[in-house]
Image (cartoon, rainbow, N blue to C red; front, side):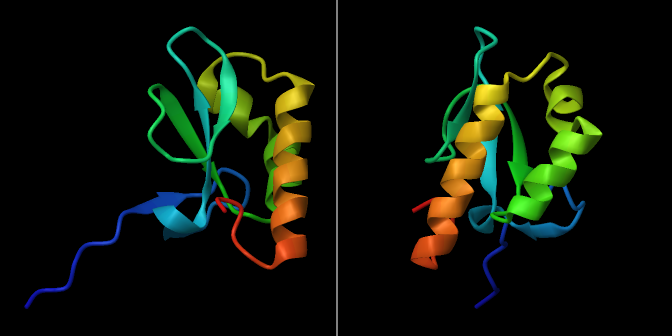
Length: 97
């Protein structure tokens, strides 16, 4: 039986390719709002980050989310992402829990 294909995505912070389920998706919705997609099914343009605060810091410094979404990203989105990543590290699970 052939192996099932695992979808891969690239982190916008560190540029490494990882399985989609290991990454956190940030999405710009059709109305232009930016939010964290915990399920991975929200409509709109998505960008992926590793569940590592260092990757978030790199993405913020390089303005990677702004480039991906072609619009400014509010500081609240970065704060929410940082809180989600910190909570996931404390639990020892991935950020999508």
